[in-house]
Image (cartoon, rainbow over all chains, first blue to last red; front, side):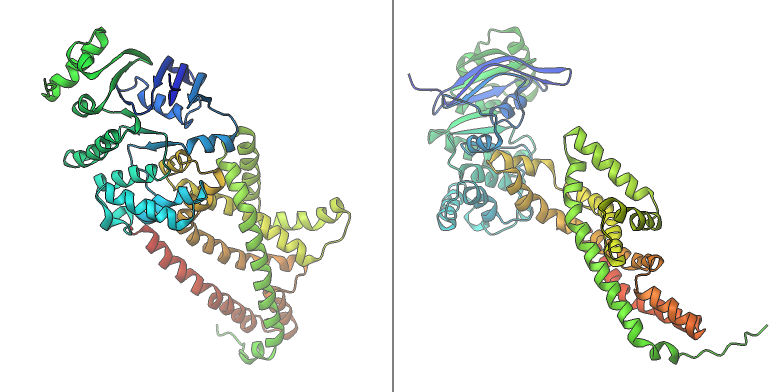
Length: 253
Length: 223
């Protein structure tokens, strides 16, 4: 059996006295799309941020492609280069054009020659449908466009896994679709993805597996058909009832 | 009551060579002190921002002492203490440059701190997530953006140093004020000479002040 791309073993994370993650274990295989859902404060973002060590776990192990996540800064950076992350607030660098945002890391971190990085950037911009914006500054783009660029910036590093931290939560509703389209495309191409999201429809359509996180633990996990139609854990039922009921969105049969 | 004093405005021009020397020395000292503070201010500012409690506390203590004592006190202290501590004599100019430079470092550290803080945490996290090192993040993402915010106060600080060089007359450095004072006492013409010195200071600092005002306006307009 192939080595999982991401393996998390008994992960605990506390912020001072606040025990956020209480022993989470998870394995994600190559090409798998895992959607993490759950109430606010359940630890979904924290879990994601532990995977690339933006938060240092209090205890537990994280394995990327079978290798334990290192402790030395230089090695941490090397592993981070294999993991792509897209943030809720896009976090594009405003003093650089879209092109420079995308090529900065490949050139500086992977020591890629500039011409090659530019070529990759151009292909990615075409893929996300924003070729004409490549020399613009981020401030001139809409939220949805900025987020798509942020995805391209992460993809330029040719990562083994992509982490998405509520990437549509800060967008106006009409801009959400264009970002989800790009993510759907990535999933179809076989990218390994871990997506923290509130977009239930998207999770149902695109994810291979749904993981429901509540109060720092995985309460339930399984394929979308099972989780959305026949959840077993009471907390899952409660959450889905609230989220799907209030939004008036019934999961499509 | 009418003042029985007939100004002789030519006197300052007659002593122009000495005054010019003083002015040039003022510039040289201010520039050296500024560069010293520019270099030392960054590590001090970074310590101030550091998550390491010890480094942060030391930096804060250093800054508070420097900002809380009058420059004259710092100057005389260095003037008497430094040669004792180092065991070698230092020229007045060197002592002066050190005092001005170290004193300004505290203010520069605060400028660096506010400039670096102005760059949002999210951008730094994005750089980290992409595998960029601390140095790469600082040099490519943080400093270029922080500079926009930092340049007006840095320029302000330069103007302040330029004026503070006049303190060095207390230890006999022949800068502009020392020269002016000397000339006005030998010619008994304080009005003309000191007014002329004041005028020179204004001519020198005003362009910088104007530039600061224009840059500050540019920084506050949205991109």
